[in-house]
Length: 228
Image (cartoon, rainbow, N blue to C red):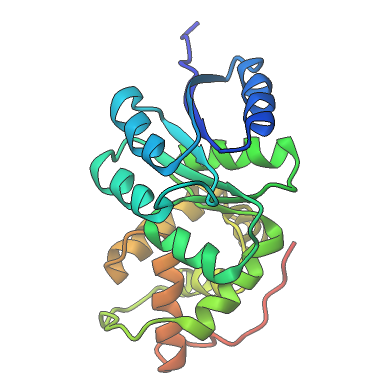
């Protein structure tokens, strides 16, 4: 039987009790290996450089310039993916963090199962947002979307379906259920959409889709869709 390597995780948080507790919980799970801990923005960069974890779970309200540290890791340490684990449900904070390159955004009031699920999804290269902030983040993107030049592209009817569900704040799992597709197929469509729109991540796909919808370039973008 093939031996599956555990996911290497680092936790960076300036609350010692929380940090100790969460490390114990994940250390007891053979699926994961806690390789380092830290307590400030500088530790985020140092740990990424020295330990090269697969996943870093970081608080946003720590000493130092956390967003700058995120940007440094995203640009210079591409094998490490980031999950924000924060008490802040502020929409502007969430959008800024996701645009900086974090793939996961989990509220500290979430369950251990949700945090674990987020880490698994981010490890696969997918984006995860706590349900309590996901819809509001999409709404914030609608209001605050930057002016951008969206390439003139043609979408298949299925690609437009996926885009419309994204505009409703749906996760890959919800899109798959609604369209009777596998999550793997939805992930493939996401990759195609990123290539067609010349963007880097799910957040930028939503931004570009908003621009297309406002200019009439996305047929039926205002259509209400059922969420499962």
